[in-house]
Image 1: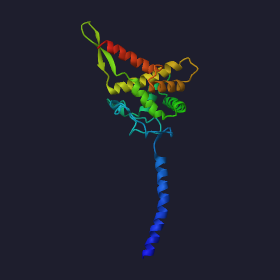
Image 2: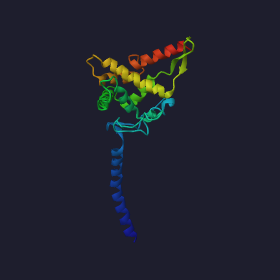
Image 3: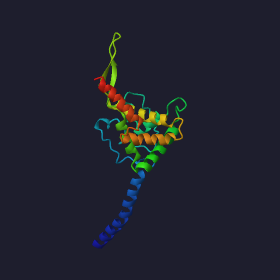
Image 4: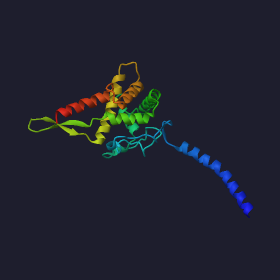
Length: 218
């Protein structure tokens, strides 16, 4: 009986090893990666106020095209994957309306360029650019009966994310217009400059300008 038990254990141990290795392979195969390349695992949101509004962890997708109805309710767009939000923001100015596959292609090429130039995970670079690109203070119009003045106010986290995505896409669109550089190259440049907080970025320039005006109106 003891010999039989030993044989059984050795058989089980021998058969368990390939099962373990195959389970590891299936885990790596089942891991969700953006465009099948860029992992979401090490992507970090350093700004605590924006963690709930930059949808990365728990919102992993292979493609930034979920066809979700994120406009049906207030604040639901905060659950939309952050890369998909950029794709939607790229589809602007009439002639580009609804061309989401084109927007996805542009983002894919831009991420390839970012990886080639920085050797970093482009999802992380984009998240850093969104964190840096939104103004933290803005000015609003206050007053009635004809007397109008500007008053400095704090900007909510969701609006910071919205503004950052809008400014990144606008900067890329403006720099690629009537230019030999493609929109993908311009978007990659804009994202990398914003992630480094470089003043060459349109988004960083606008953010600094908005904050400067707000500071004057305190």
